[in-house]
Image (cartoon, rainbow, N blue to C red; front, side, top):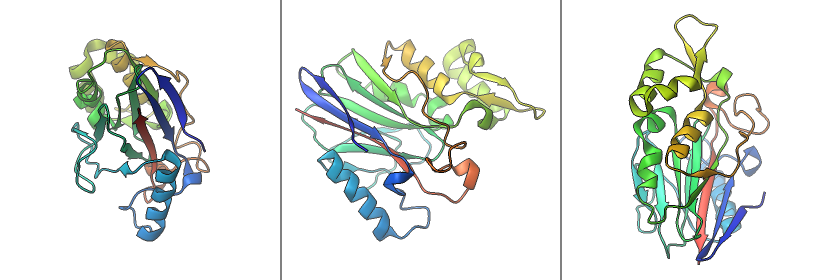
Length: 233
């Protein structure tokens, strides 16, 4: 796997969404930490810089990368101009969103589980950017038929986004349940801020592709893939 690259007038953005081929990247799921740290070290070598990891808590906190503790409690990272540390979030069904400026000198990534997404974590990351011309790459997540939720989840998105959020939900075969589309919900939020999504087609569903992705809903005890971004002047 090689990172994608975007060359802007003020810097180069590199990002990738890992698969099972890069191994488990989560230290909190019972795997040998020596093996996990080796997997992380290989990715740091691939990215060409150290990687800032997080202790993710399904919240909406976004921190500036560069001078943080080993793994602070947060679900998003912003990389400002001149900061060459890569930023990472881990997922195993939740969506990840990489955002960067067309100038190439700012970037960030968020772990957008439904709680963070409904709490406005995308807007919190966007609020850190100085530039306004932004692009986004969406990581792997559940397809709609496997994201079954109660009505309170749809209500949380309606509270944030208004009635337009209803278009991302359909009835489930199971009474009292709804099926949500995380990719669509994130795309709608990004579109509201004028962010261009550079990969419109969703990646394969994490639940449906066990040989390609880890999935918590499918396996419960499982590893984590990651989405990682860096900038270089």
